[in-house]
Amino acid sequence: MWQVNTSMAVLRNTVTDADGDTANLTFEVWTTDASGNPKAQVKLTDANSYGVLVSDFVASGKTAQVTVPSGPLKPGVTYAFHTSAYDGSLYENTWSPWAKFKIRNRAVDIKLPEPDKDAPTPNQDDFQQPLQISQPVSEPDVPSGGLPGTQSAPAKPVTPRIDGRKGWSCGELNEKTGIQPCTRIVRNVSEKTRKALAAATARANFALLVDWCEGLANSHIKRYEACLATFTYEYEGLVIRDGEPTGEIINASWALHHEYKLSSNTNLITEKLVLFPVGPIDPRFGQITLNVDFNCVAANCATDTTSMAWNGALEWSPLTDEHITEGTITHSWTGGSVTGVTENVYLSTKISAFAQTANPAASRYGAVDAAIRCDTISQNTPGCTFSKYAPTWTFNTKKYPAAAAHAWLIQAKSPNHPGVKQYDKPMLFLPAAGKNSWNRDPQKNRDVICPSGWAKTYGHPETTRLTEISSTDVASCDEFAFAASYNSGGMPANMAGLNPVASGDQCLQTYAKRVTQGEWHLYDDERKPAPTFQEVCGRSAMSNWMNTGSMAPFSGGFSLKYRLLDKDPYWVNTPGFQNCNAAAVPVQCTVTLP
Image (tube, rainbow, N blue to C red; front, side):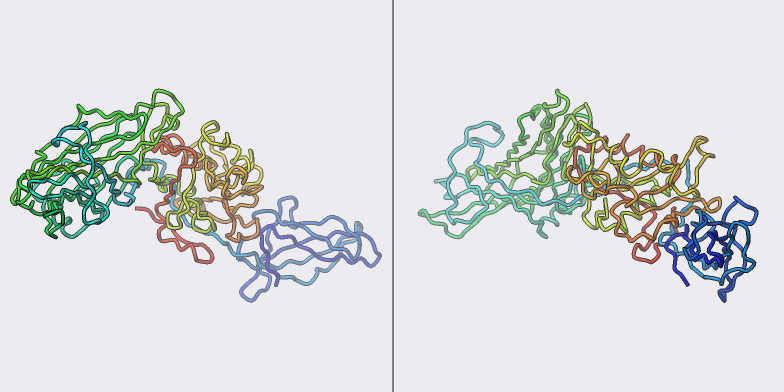
């Protein structure tokens, strides 16, 4: 039995004419029963009343052939065919022996629900999960000079740490008390700090700037928010006698909870710092006062010092004083007066400590991974993002199930897994020509994968159109990865394209069909050879309403909302496919949605 890799099977047989005349062959195809015997004739064409295909005339001894059109032969079914010759004057009065063949099984069969045209558009913010980043980095700095509270007092020389340990920033030795003051930022989250955080939370309601920050340990960011949590500021006094350390150290420390908030469509940058003691303050310090300098480091960033507000004193008494202090301040990016510019901004914080028995010492810190990018490229109005954070685009599977299924299939089965966080394969955004480094119009990528008119001319004829939703709906070509990405198969290699192909014919081919009301399937195109799943792109024939509707919120909302610039990474999420096994052969599953 022959195994055939396409439903548009090519049937062949050799012509033999006793007189040596040319002849053609009539091909008749039948289904078979369980024993492989012919069962019922298959209608191959409407061109004649017999439903048979007739070859061209060929010379005696040569092979005649016909190609079965799309539709009559089904995947996974065994058929038998035989032929009868005609030399132009005489018909052969017998049929050739039967030859059996089987059409390949489907490689993809994903069962989908009916599109819900009234399904609400997902709130993309709901799918943005915090990304853990490195804890703030200590940046040793000199104390501010005079009494805490002065923002611009001249700096005094730093006295080196006598015991030589690294990571500390030290102030002058107090000659009267013999105390050498030093400070540092401790990045790790200790159990002591955790307990202090729990106790502080229990006795006070944090007025959070970032609502998802409460209870988090370590530092995290989203596209417009940062939460720098549970690291520690230490102020230490090293006791010195006759110029030598005695080994006696007195200590005070504060847990730090720092939040940043940006805006997608304004130039404002807001930060909030919460401080609370980690354990009692050593009484040998006496009262300690802290001073906080908030700095916005960029050529075009202005700090509004009038916006600084503290809820709680920056002074702590020894032993029993464990009050919480919160401070806020606002900066503004002033580089947004011109369209088409971008600038990196860095927030740096300096905390100085001053005790009754010790001179000032200070440390500065900043979160390297919370660097800010402000621009007037993605939108004409200025806005700033945490550019290290890659946002997640989530398909509306309820409303556009076939489009989501196509994306999931290529993500799961393609060796490049475009947009899959698990494989660390982000999509890289290609904005409009003039906003990308190659001046490449994303439409040119689409033209490679989905040339104009492809779906009408070459798409699967059983592709379902949703004329009951859109009266003008037609078959459309859906490509994945998206044309507006460097992952697109249409993006040339010499323009940093990640998966270039010469034609969409090299992509994995599928189509979306309604089998019965309420039941849809995404099938591989059985008219083509079975996919190898080494294809680096996908091309699918589906309803134009579904194809264009599924992506409209991306270009009109998502890319603007999260201020995506050239080559910005993002992830693609397809809800509803979590129970589909991509490793199964064939890829076969049923998608269910709540």
